Length: 144
Image (cartoon, rainbow, N blue to C red; front, side, top):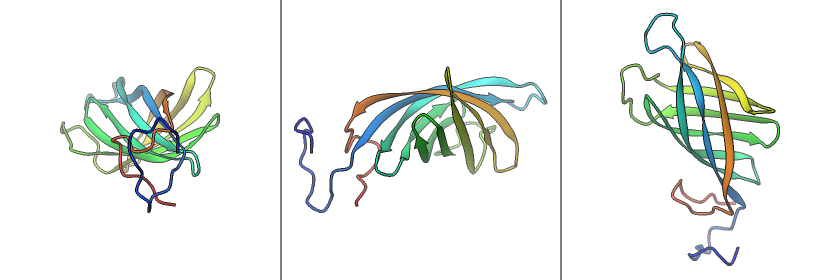
């Protein structure tokens, strides 16, 4: 375990290499205006478990806070499911929203699919913020 970690890890939990990332971008939104498409910004964080590629975290956008969980293949693809925690606005999509991104020269480009089958565009950038980010307030530690 890195010397700089300020707390003791319980014996039944082993250290896993993880990195805290920030994520920000935009997604297509229609706001109920028929076929008029506009962009909605989003931002948040996730933790990457280096052993598995698993990510988990939270993002927020115009429609409210959401949990995200999925996989990151650095330099290749980012895929996650987003579920709104509370539907802050009536236009927020219910259920799971699937996002898929591929690496591009200017970030990650891709889109999302709602449970209804509606598709939209999305793009984002991710940035590592804290290496060895074990135990930050983003969920419980994973056990081996």
